[in-house]
Amino acid sequence: MKEIKKDLIFIENISKKIISILPSFNIADNKILPYGLKAHTRSVSWIVEQVIVQQTKFYQEKLGLKNVDFNLPDTSLHDCIIETEDKKYYINIKISNTTNGIKKNKNDISAVEKLFMQYSANKKYNLIFACFGIKFNNLKISFDPNYLHIFSPQFLPIYVNPRNDKIQAKYDNKPIFRDRDEFLNLLKSESKSIIL
Image 1 (cartoon, rainbow, N blue to C red):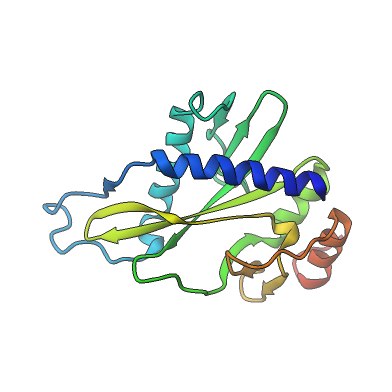
Image 2: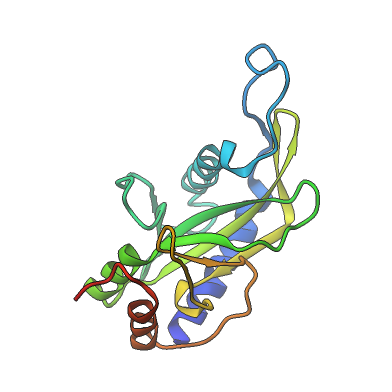
C-alpha cells in the first residue's frame, strides 16, 4: 500500500509538469465543422488522450523519464507505460470537461473482469488513473491547469454498474486504503462476470 501511495505522488508530480507543457489545439477547422463541436468529452476523449500521451513521450527527457510506451493493444487497461530508471508505471488517461464548472458525476472507470484478471495474473501490476481537465471553445481544446486527479482503482469505493459490469466512481473520490487481496475479493463479490 505504501508503494502505491508513493507511485500516486510521483505520477501526480509528473502530470502537473505535463499540464504545464500541453498545447491548446483545434480539433478541426470550421470548413469541416462549420457549426462547431458539441462540448461532450466522448467526442474528443481519444484524441485528447493521444495528445497527452504523445506529448509525454516527446518531452520524456525534459520530464526526467527513461521511456514512454504507448504502442499497446486497444484491449489494454492502460494507455501508456511510463518508465524511470528503476520502475514502470501503468497509466490510464481519463478526461473531464470543466468548461461549465466541474460536475461530480460517477464515471465508468474500468471493466471489472479485465481489472481482476490483470491484478490476479501479475502481482506487480498497479494501474494508475490520471484524469485531466479540458475546456472547449468551439473547435479549440485547452487543458485546465486547475484540474487533475490521480488515483488507484484499488483505493476506490467499489460500485459495479450491473448493466456493463464496470466500476463506477467519481474522479475525486476520497481514497479507501485496502490491500490487493481485499481489492480482489471485493471485485469478486460485487461482480457477476468473475467466475473462478
